[in-house]
Image (cartoon, rainbow, N blue to C red; front, side, top):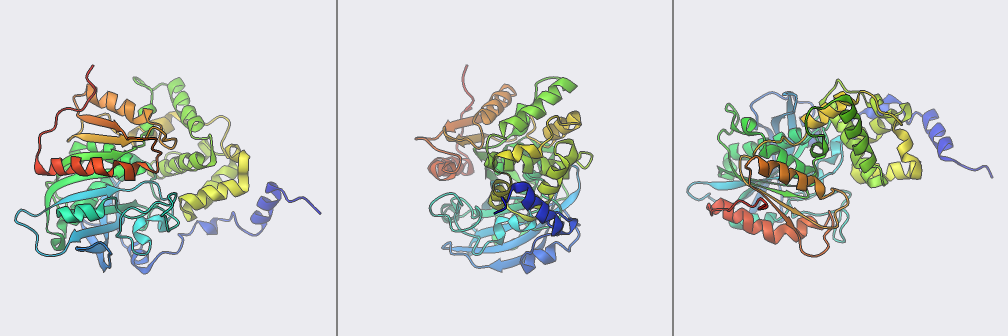
Length: 434
């Protein structure tokens, strides 16, 4: 019997048109998102351009799917989708605080937005955990507890995950803008009874978005939005990713750019799962910065494969596809020597977390067994920001917590922290004392 090899499978796939450009069409989405994808990104930041009331099993809550105007690192207007969950009934005098959630990695195709699953307005439901019941992570952490406290919840999908355009995966500045504009959108909806007080929280990719937004005062303060004057009281980052923190300090010369890019490629090529995250990040960065070319980093085969996968599949399906087709040879999709590294390094830094004093306190939670986001990333972030006079706390969670147990194990701690910020309780500077 003739032996079937990976190359023969790829050859057959090519013959059948699997690698043809026609597969780059957006995957099927529900009617709400299909109609949004036909809309132009015109309007004020945070302006809700479409909303639909949906059911939620959260007691005392009402929920909507929304589409709203946002923008990206290049200043281009975009459309993002997401969820809004608010208490039922009349809002108290002074209104309700807003909690805006930035989710972790779900993928890069148009059907990867967490709001697109059945019954999305629920507590966080994780794919990897025993109780996971979907092909992705979805839901909003502590939504039930926050609703009981009388808060309004909003959870962005990010641009490119249901609103059209190509998702800028882990381009933290863009993801942070989507998270803020989601808060503006929720605040602009009369049904929510929201006030200006806002807490930002996020995990993994969303943790990066959270700390990126913390260092974007001009974007936060700008006027002419759908809901001006958002007052951010604090930022909660669960295992936040930050590739830009690994950039060399000082002037970025060619040698430093080469080392930075090659170091990031090597760090995240140790297994298929991390490789999928890393290559999706490069794919998303290229979407944010069109002067870059995927062929700078990938072989010809690699360019075709990553475009095909990331235009059509969400995170875990993408990882499985790499594993099925490439097993231990997945790094062969990368060039042995990347080119145009200066431009790539500059883009990765620009799209990453700004080294700027945060506009409000930041609290980070992480697990000692996190292999998806190395804890040294947020340790370096804390070191840099504390030197600038920021207030950044960082707590290692009890036990041996992984990346995926971090949201659940951190909940008792951040619930108390958030309540204290909303109530105006004074907070000491949590930076390490030398």
